[in-house]
Each structure stands twice: as C-alpha cells, then as structure tokens.
Image 1 (cartoon, rainbow, N blue to C red):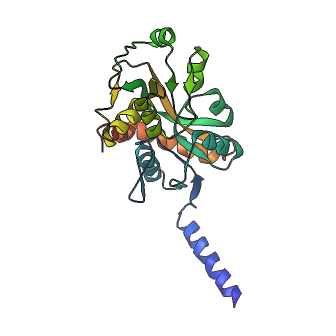
Image 2 (tube, rainbow, N blue to C red):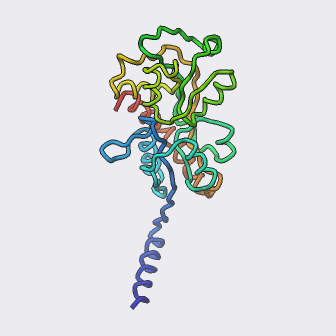
Image 3 (cartoon, one colour):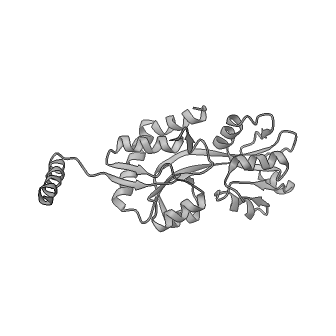
Length: 253
C-alpha cells in the first residue's frame, strides 16, 4: 500500500517541476528583541519594519520564504546564530567587524539610522556632539549588543549595556541610574510615544551620527540563496518600496 502513495508524491513533484514551479527556499531568521518598531509583537502577531521587508522580499522573489519571525532574541544571540549557521540571515543591523566576519551584506542599505540621545525631562544637559560627551562623561545607557556600545567605550566613555530591554533602559534614565540613553531615533521616538513618556523623557535635538543598516546573510548560507535575497532587495530599492516601508513606520503606523 505504501508504493502508490510514494508514486503519487513523485507524480505531484514531477508535475510541479514540469509546470516550472520552483521549490521553495526556506531561510531562517530571528527577531530582535526590544527594538520596536523594527520588530513588534502585537496581539500575537509579528509586525514592524523588518517583517514588512521580509514580506516584500517574498513578494518579489516567490521562491523565498522566511521562518522564525516570532523568535525574539538579543543581538548577541542573533550574532552567534549567524556564525553557527543556526539562522540564515538577519534584518537591519549596523555594520561591524564581527558581522563582516560571520555574514555578508545582501542588497543596498535598508535605511539610515540617526543616533540620538535622551535624558530625564528635568535634566537640562546640553550635548551637541561627541566632544561634549567626552568632556561631560555622563554614564551612558545603551541596549545590550548594540553596535555603537564599543565605539563609545573607545572614546573613554562609561557605558551600561547590561540589558536589551530598552523600555527598562529608559526607566533607568528617569530613575537617575545613568544620565544619557543612546539609541537610534526610530526606536527612541517609538518608545517615548507608545509608552506615554513625553513628560518624563527629553530627546535631545542633536544627531550624533548617521549610519546605514543592512540585511545580513550568514556565510554558511548557500550562495544561490544569498544571491536571490540580494537581487530581491535591489528590486525593492529601485521600486522605492524600501523607502515606503521605512517611511510608514517613521510616521507611527
């Protein structure tokens, strides 16, 4: 009785191949915890900039499917998974030496992040640039695994990156456990707005640095899969879809 079943599956596969339907390529990802709206879990559903980008890639390249969007992990865990080949790619991370060693960039920059600072609303500290930071030497809170934490330490600054929960990091600033919170503007604005912290947190006006974020494919991922991702992202860039996705979330979708 098993032979006809096997033959039927073979027939289905053969018919699909004859019809020109390519097999799906499943690529494993992980969501980045506590970095809304890059990754969000709302009402049991995954949402955000990166889920929208992954869906757009699948639309322009039907051979690709992503899995693991609901697995929220810290940046160090995501980096280890890329290095070990436990995941195939990661969406919207800054460029670092470690990431260049364990993965390759696919496509163009997804968008540009602006690094900004936040302080408690009653703290009138004025910081226009990194020279001011070095001169004042406040304790700076950052997210665990953030690419810029080591950059700040190289300037001789004291950094608290003991947690990846960025709402907790903001609450540290409010409570006086650290004076400055260093974060990208997209996440910082989202956290303050969505958690009603406008009367407790002051976002400083200066942009400390602008950096591109990229889509990374693990070096252990097959080159053919990486090429499909690369081509899809360049198509999304050319059509303006990458810019439209980012713009929708900046507006507070």
